[in-house]
Image (cartoon, rainbow, N blue to C red):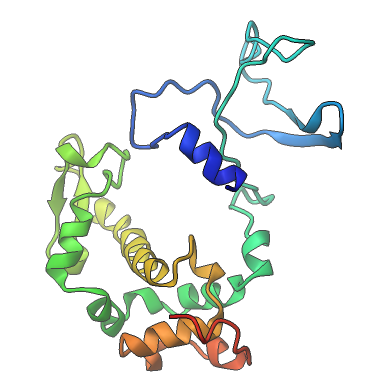
Length: 226
């Protein structure tokens, strides 16, 4: 079992569960890392200094036979412009996925209809967190018909329609990506080889919607996947 799978098995944390106390949230900087037979793998981070007290003051640390405080963490690399760094995705098929975004592939009517009916999208959207505050789905309502539907909580259900509409494109992208990745058995579109992506789209009847980069890849990797 991988470290990721083991961690997920040990602690099941949902970002939609607002009852989970957050010990620390903020931007950090990697200042060092190490690996040896005595302490194993370690990493050191510099924390922001805008709080009056150290966020980990008073917590148990690993020393001798003493066990340190355990945490569950998810880290996202940032670029200098504060956007997520896609270096890992680039090593796989990130450039192809970027073209999908650039060409507006996710919003092609043929792609949407191949993924599901408007009612199926609405049913999926009804189970999503509020697009504004990420409030969990059970208490949310839908705004908008068909593929324009978005999930909002009672607090934001009367928000300005134009403001709410800015969140809708992301919801469409998440839906389409989720369905494609479920077929491919991957965690993200950037993990799907171009040849296999073409196979999936051909099975869906939307091969002619694929950007040129997928045909220029010249790779047959993954084409025998079912």
